[in-house]
Length: 233
Image (cartoon, rainbow, N blue to C red; front, top):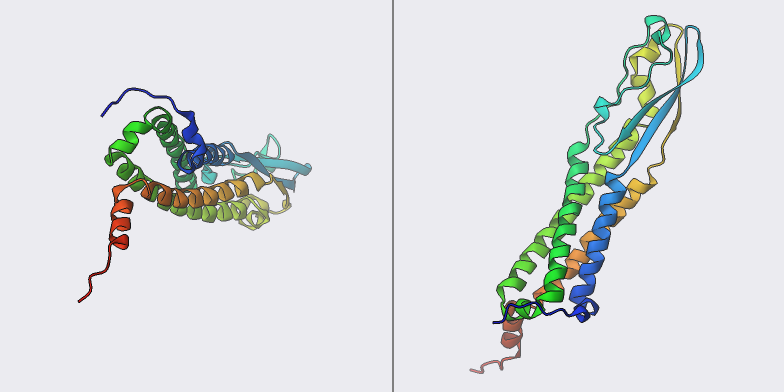
């Protein structure tokens, strides 16, 4: 078996190569839409000597909201009645799981494309490579399924933890003479898109399992068994 480099970009036009390019691109999008998010939630606060002061809490990936505090409404903190008010929830594990998977998938797709383009003859001649590719494809499809649904649940909780329902839980807003009104929160449409990319990746990798399976001797053995004549008694 010759191991030398043989560049053949026509492999990218084959289903196995083309779907790998799509997976490579969508992994980047999943990583960017979740890992690059920055936003803030804002309140209107009125207290001693301060009327309708906007206070904000800026949050971003990896969404450790319980470390994010609202800015004080004035230098004296509403005459001493305002204490640090934090958002609630730590969603870093779900977000990091999703983003880390996207980064690993990107690296694997890069390596796989190098093999498909430069060493496809080695890939075809040694069945260990397709079998390894198959095992990784099955695992990746499963991990996209799990990480996407875990991240979707976390995203729903993030929306609650940064929305209007946070006002009743802020102790400083309950002080005499202090009123708080929810003002706005950054749109999380891009995070919704990240969930869509996760689901799309899951579907692509599920299809990839079948394409890689066809390259293994498991598929060939099954074809030989199904095509062999049935013995008659």
